[in-house]
Length: 305
Image (tube, rainbow, N blue to C red):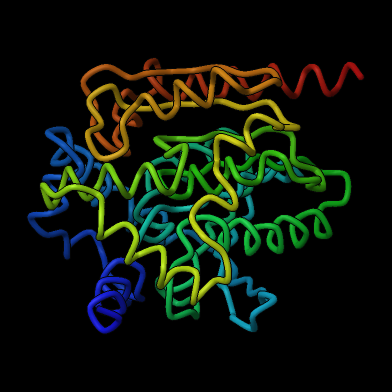
């Protein structure tokens, strides 16, 4: 059983190496939903545009000795506002934020794309599914706060990155003004239970138990040590929750639940007709304007203090 557990853990959490929008398989079409072809088309259009813009490579070293990479874009117009974007499971920043990243630049922000551990150029054998990534992200937040001592930081996460952003919501973070959570799951345990049923058509037990056993060996704690929803319940920052209504991979109910318990200034946007990570297909009127109006309101309130 231990060999099977380890093999299962490697398959779910292991480093899959560098990939691109051209390497999507049939599983992606199932998990991402009917709007995925349009999302992929938009991403393939904007990814090379974003990648071609001048940017710097930032590196931090985690407490477990890993080198984690970030790509930093300085806005053409001088500003001390920075959006730090955290990508999803087995993905990378230039893919998940090809369109969103360009929009932050167009709207006057600097941009930092974190490449999570065990993804792309960043080191690491295993993804942590949020808790480890939230600790890594705090190193980048400090780096940007040191670079712009009087600046403001927006954290924007997508999918697992959205959950990572939620896990940051109860932390003391320098210069962070607001958090945007796109299609985040509220609980690691509940999300894996859902994925096992959705993808494998199997009951969660015993696969979930096997995964958690190996996870504890690797990270020293189980799935329930840090739930996104528990962190949001004690959030310190304004939060914008957004989700595609037709998301079957991470159900929109997750964002609704977290919105319900968030004690700070908040907004919830459920975008009709869109699947996983595809709410951005709502465009300016159906996605971006809502987010940036919220962020502008946060900025105005901060300026009045």
